[in-house]
Structures are given as C-alpha cells and as structure tokens.
Length: 347
Image (cartoon, rainbow, N blue to C red; front, side, top):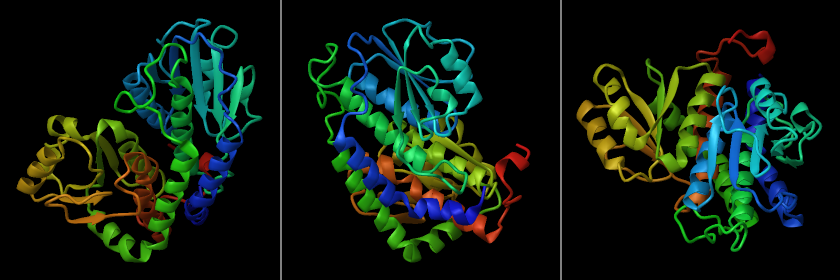
C-alpha cells in the first residue's frame, strides 16, 4: 500500500463516479437476473460486507427477503434455484468469498460484483457486474467501496420496480429504491468534488481535532453504518491507528463507557433519532466529536459539503472525510508502520 497513490485514488473519485453513471445509463447491468428470485444473499468481507449490510437493510425495508453475511460464515442459507447470491469482491480474489460462492455455483443464481471482471470470483458466475472504479493503485479499497454501494442501490432498483416478483413498489417504504442512480452519482460526484476542492479549509482542523492518544471512534445510524465501519477501517489500514465503529443507538449500550476513561475522539455521522442521546453523554464526559454532514450542538466542529442534506448522497460521500484525514496522517508518517506492499506486511 502506497499513501501517495491512495490520495490520488481519492482525488479520482469524481471522475470514476461520472464513468459509473455513464455505464448505468448505457444499460441495466442486472438485466440478466431471472424472474422468480425469492431470496437475496449478499456475501463479502471487509468493505464489501459493510456496503452489503446497508443494502440488505434497505432491501428488507422495500419488501425483499435479503441478508448480508460474512462470506467466512460456516452456516448460511442453503443453495436453491430461487436464491440470488451476490458475491462482492473488489479484487475478485477474496478467499472467503470464493469459498462461499463455491457452495452455490450451479445451484443458486450467482452474481459476481467485482472490479476485476476476469478474476476468480467470476468463474462459473451466472452474471458478472463490473464496479467500473478503475485501478486503485494505492492498494486500499476506497473507490470500489463507493461503487459497491452505488451498484447495490441500482440492484435494489432493479429488484423493487413495480410488478417485479410481487415486491413493494419503489418508494413506498423507507429505504425504497425509486432513485435515478446515474443522477444520484452525479450529485455524489459534485459533493465529493466539493470536499476535495475545499480541503484546505477543513482538513487540517478536522485532523487536529481527531488526533488523540486513544484512537478514533466512528458513529453512524444503522442506515449509514457502512460509513462508520469504512471510516474506522481507513484509520486502521492506512496510518495504522486504533479505530472502531458503532451504531448510534447502540453506542449508549456498548461504547459510552469509553468516554469515562479515554481521551475519546469520534466522528459522528448525524441522522439517527438517538444523536441527542449520544451527544448528551459526550458533553457530560467532555469528549470530542467531529460532525460530518450536519451540525450537532456540542460538537467540536462540523464538516459540511454540497448536497449533504440528501441522505443518499451522504451515504455515498461522507466516508471521504475520514479517508482524507487518514491519508494526511499516513503521508505524515504518524503511526504508519510501512509503505511496503500489503503482502509484505504482517496483519
């Protein structure tokens, strides 16, 4: 992994999003999914699983029987002809995902979602959907994470159109999939470009606010939990800092205790009905919060960006704040172990 190239990968996000928007306008990549699908099983590890869990939640809200699981799980749904298995692997070579797909190949309908269309995960797949994220030369999944989320939203749109499989019409339930995804991607590109263009204004203060001796904590509502999980991963994977993610409501049951003894510093992505509860405890304990995409009473600072009042744009954009802070720390050498290729590093 190379920090300079990781930063370049982040800077290329708007162009990559535009390319994906064009590709989706050119044709529905999910048109090959047959009718009669009864269940959707999303499989992946790391960033792929983060995106899948949020997508599965939205699919269930729209009336689709969907679940996201660790590809490494020994127990899962049995293969069946009416099961759609979405195997997500940016590189196409995740061992756990390949093992999980092997149980379904030829027995369920297997869709491979990957940034490497000729990779192992595509072998024997019934349908291959490219992520169109371009090469991530920094060695860190950043654009592929964003594109995975976007394509899973497009998949949801395909599965929930009125009349398809008797599902709930898009938009009738919270988390419905009635959105024009190419248009959403162009708004996301504008939001992403806004954060990149104005980073001289917000990046240094945000990095200083989060720079404490006990790591970084990330908090988001269940509907955006992938943002907290991906952000924490970026702090671990690049600058090798301690970081962990928590759902906003659950925070009061599992992470609040840390504010008692640690110099607790967190990124909070607003939008939960339990934001006030978390901020009340944080205020009582004198902890530090950076709000991203909204203003919260008691936060040390907030980072706003274009279209951040659009929840779908926020879902696809907000991790960039943590990604850029991680890149800054990594480039500065703070807590970095090495810039050698990942295969040369021990876990």
